[in-house]
Amino acid sequence: MMLRRRGALGGARQGRKALAVPLCALAVILGPTGAAHAGTGGLTPVDQKSPNVERSTDIYYLILGFSGLIMLLVTVPLLIFIVRYRGRGRSREVEGAQIRGNTRLELAWTALPVLILAVIAGFVFYKVPGITDLEAEASGDSRLEIKVDGRQFYWQYRYPNDVIAIDTLRVPLGQVVELEIGAPESDVNHSFWIPALGGKFDAIPGETTRTSFRADEVGTYEGQCAEFCGVQHAAMLQAVEVMPRGEFETWLANEAGAQRRGASELGERTYQGACAKCHGMAGEGLIGPPLAGNSLLQDRDALEMIVRNGQGAMPAVGEGWEDRQMDALFRHLRRNVAGGSGAEDGS
Ligand code: HEC
Ligand SMILES: [Cu+2]
Image 1: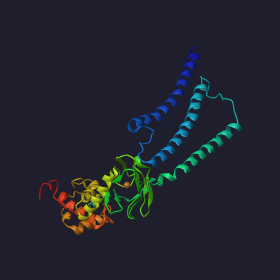
Image 2: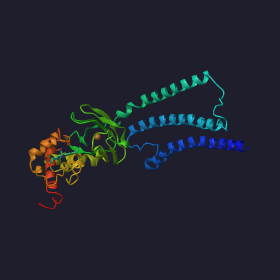
Image 3: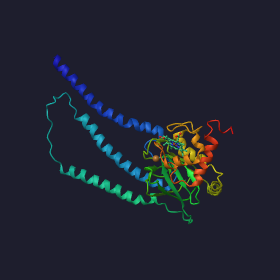
Image 4: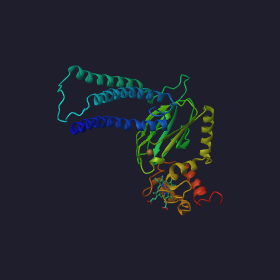
């Protein structure tokens, strides 16, 4: 009597245990998607602001659809089998029916994946060309070509009229912008990524990667270097600022003049992008030594040597810079960093 009761109880407990495992697994799988949803809109890509993003988003949804279907195809029968064929207190040694082979089933699970992969591959080949090469608008607009250099740990951009920008790239609304992305030979791999405007494109030393986008809404779209590139990789942020066409043209023309005269913010931008991530915003020191009050800032030749070639753990951040950028940086250093934190109000 006692024995039988204990056996029956054990069986019920086993059944509940068998159910607990898949339920926990489901919670583990679904938990993070809930968190992701709260943070970023869940499984959906960021809002697209350029037509090429639409193409990669279409591919994403097709693959998401198939993988969701396959997940259900596997997990639903799994749950049914777990419940339906559970132990029910049978001894562990009892064997079930021995089934060998099912030709139809085996043909189906071979042919179906081949078919699914063929559909995905066909769709991808149809969609991909338009991602890297957007057609210029029917109006016969020319493309704006911008050279992008990934550097440790900043992005340097160069416009056709030689204007230099750092980390933040300004572009006109509604015009195709073509990026030529690279990195100096002495640098490392980086990856250009503004999710709202397109996928990741690698910046590889000595090579050029091309992509284009056409922003169709004014705004600032943020991104981050997407290739782990060294100690300050996390600080290698970037942004694209989309401006109305006229405003952009005016800015670009004015900036070219200002940079030629040495009256632009190029020095400050260069300091913030290329130096401050290691030496601190006011030169107070961070992972590099403090620059504020450092007498080296008075010695242009020695300083230029360090900036162009690097020194110890400091990369050659200024390799390949034109003199006007170096001049602008030194002017900024002398005015705003050399004297320490109080330099701006002092002499
Ligand atoms: C990746 C981080 C990093 C970046 C970016 C960086 N530095 Fe450095 N810098 C260092 C480190 C680390 C040292 C110490 C090098 C050593 O081992 O001697 C250093 C040293 C220096 C020194 C010598 C200080 C001394 O007293 O010996 C100067 C000057 C300097 N950096 C200026 C700059 C300037 C200007 C920039 C921007 C154009 C810059 N650094 C960008 C990390 C960095
Ligand atoms: Cu990087």
